[in-house]
Image 1 (cartoon, helix red, strand yellow):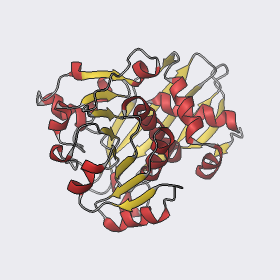
Image 2 (cartoon, helix red, strand yellow):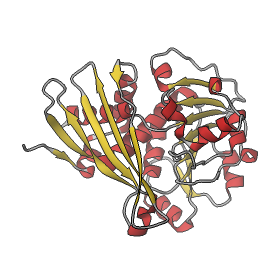
Image 3 (cartoon, rainbow, N blue to C red):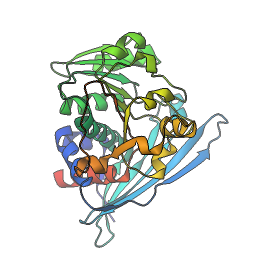
Amino acid sequence: MNIPWISAQEMDNLLSYPVLIEAIRSAFSERHFTPERGHFSYTTDRPDASSVLLVMPAWMNTNKMGIKLVTVSPHNAGYHMPVIQGVYILFDRQTGAPKLLLDGPRLTSWRTAATSAIACDYLARPNASSLLIMGTGNLAPELARAHATVRPIRHIWIWGRNPEKAEALVSRLHMPGVVIEKANELSCIVPQADIISTATLSVSPILRDAWLRPGQHLDLVGSYRKDMQEVESIILKRTRIFVDERKPGTYMTGDLAIPLAMGIIQEKQIEADLFDLCRQKFQLLRDPSDITLFKSVGHALEDLAAAACIDRLR
């Protein structure tokens, strides 16, 4: 069986954020089936390294079905390899025959950034024009491009724990009409940003409550385990909270699980998920002083929508 392979480069040639954002938005409005994803921790020959195997299937009423098989290995930086490895398989739902094999890490970057942009479109102030990205990995430039698709971004700061990586990203990220620079002191930059996107593998908070100001939108992407937390728990007490899906698995991230366990927030304070927003079951009435927060954990429907979009564009 000769199954077409969609490389990262071919994916980049086919996709654009305006198209992908609308494809994923549409998918969240349709009926779907997404079994609970498999989340399997495993060890390697490095005693300090713990990795995760994710198995994420989904299908829709239309002729769309697929599964993502990826590993998340935070220690891969030591091997000069991406943290995320794996593949996506798109099937013909009627026959069960594989249609496409796609580069898993690149698909994940595209769909994650597009999903954050969808949440931003519903939750951030319409005139939000400045963006702080905390993190310098493969997802960072995609978040910049995706957010700029839905908001009039004119100024972007890049922050990383490794200043050299932040400088390197600034030097290669070119967006017409946008000033892009490295962030040095977060305490100075955070109050200036209309949108703050966190995409790190931090296990302890890097975004402080004292730095925030009214009217901001927080896009939390990085933490995916219960022991990982990018923002101080107290931040969730004074923000309006949204998630990709209201499901127990959503709360496996430390950014939600820790403040929930501490009693700082309750589940009822999570106002809506992307299904509510895309289906217009929830419409945000935003006070100018509100701080909105979107916690992205990743949903198999996002991968399926992106893979199906690529299949249509081929």
